[in-house]
Length: 534
Image 1: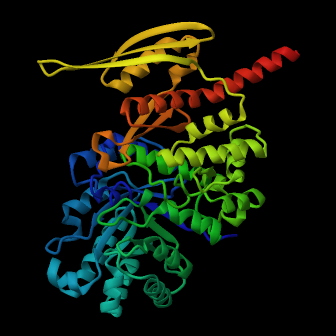
Image 2 (image 1 turned 60 degrees about the horizontal axis):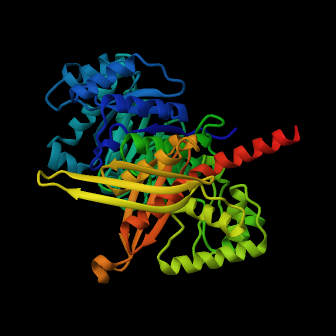
Image 3 (image 1 turned 180 degrees about the vertical axis):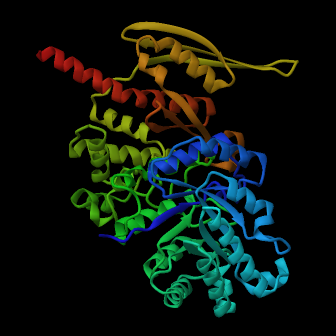
């Protein structure tokens, strides 16, 4: 049986120390349930005594049930001038519902001299008495040895004595913290092996690393290989300065590559979904280049790479994307070959021959020369393939559109759009107002064809980006517009390029709606075929 590594998430406490990070108690509760559904063992909810929001969170958590996670309360060792039983913060930890308490204490003599102004012997007493008090109150205790690796490098014997003080007082785990995030992997590995040798095989210890030197994940992995069996980190690497070690990268590396037992069976496939959900709750844009879960983690662009993937995915992918809940993507550019085009077509349910693929490649090259970019416009590229195949019928034929923007004396700006289009031989004229040209055009277009294509009601524009491609030409420069649209399940991109920003927006808008209709139209075609043969 594989060794088990316990996962300890500190997103709600350490992760919130990152710049711009702030969650309400209700949002923290959503994150807690998401982590529990993923299969995380410990969720550090924060200081139950620090502020009213944390108090409200602990009250809410006390009324919840969790399948896999244990809620952890965080605090510090007793104050230097108080007995542990008289320390108000320790009393709150003892009285809170959380069965596990994590205490952080000093390990580095520099902090004793410069920060707490406590003698080394008194610091050991603070550690031991605080742990013993909470254990006596029925709590399981994890001791976080703050700045352990700096302290170990400065005075190895004293750093180890801090760990022993916690263990002898009843702590079930001592966690070695690289609080400054500056320790390099070889040093972490060596120190962890020394700790294991000094404390003996029965001592349970964990690892808590930061990413200031870009080694947070590597340090955590090496610590586990050297003997640590609890890993602390945050979702998506949130945290102060450069962030904490990213559990989203650590977990699949431990489970898929090193053979450790981390998550319950089947839960690893939820990793991408959970990582993106936590980003959404925290109002953070998911990193497209994030290992394992990023949009580009399994995205292939070069023709040779795509050809290799078609033969054997192992040629350019280190794991199967589905193992972590991600999916393979084929990025289209002037570097693409026929294989890339055919792979994307097959992925979207379209069969094309080599001649069609070649035409699509040449079309992409010509359009990218004009300023198009299809990497972020997969919806527009799917339409391009179908147009080159010669069997695609657009939703409508445009006769004309007009946009009027009126700036009034009172400061109000009013936008009105009129479109004239043809659908199935019938002419439609619609006028609509909006808070801008794109909104007005979108409203008018939906008003014209919404009854014919009711599925459009499910499609919403979720992002709008404008880029000037040749700034030297000023207001006469070519403009690229990228739109992201979603039907609540899938999201796709569309692009328009023109010297006129409204025309570019119209092109992207139409592509976004037509691309969103592709699955619906394919389903309608299959249903019609089934009826004709029945």
